[in-house]
Length: 261
Ligand SMILES: [Zn+2]
Image (cartoon, rainbow, N blue to C red):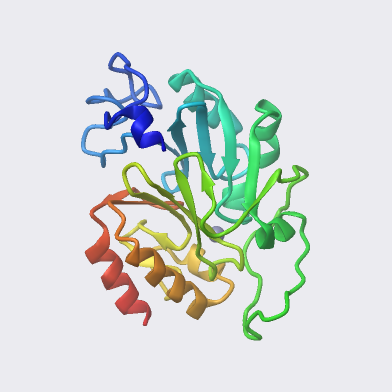
């Protein structure tokens, strides 16, 4: 859909070279930090060096993927202002506090933005920790779940299209975890299905370099199955919730899956 709109060009709007998102680094072309992976449609926002949100460009504005920890709204506001466009959608990969923590504050800044999360993790956002029929008996809700007052406007299902993004159900880290595949450039916003902090890893297998996401995982064998599903999409870029985006990630994803198997 949007590929035609853009006519194959990498950016929806011509723009003069900008300063980097934090005003520190010059950018080479649009949205490209020197030495960082090419993300023609997205900007990464980082806190503490390892908690990420992403602003994805769409013809009608910006889609925010994950709101990061509480207190991140000013950083998100600054990043959106640097792009000169409103946030029109807020997508959550899952309900953990380091992804949904600033939902209420960001939604207060952009009350018209459509808030989207899976139905299963919307329950966690309401701090409803009950199980659902058919869930593995050895699964356990873990991790920080501060909840949010904001009611999601749309409950995401596998295969849904949100602008240029396709919703990929990827349960395991949480029961309703989803990833988003940008159909324009095959960037995969994978939430906590993979982390890259300290190396590409699934959250199905102990990772001493970045144990937090693994410790918060609901059901590891389900997480591993989802990691395989995401690998099978053959993404051009892996953009995780924690760690730097990785270009051509397939070999590293294969190794991560093999470690988790
Ligand atoms: Zn998480």
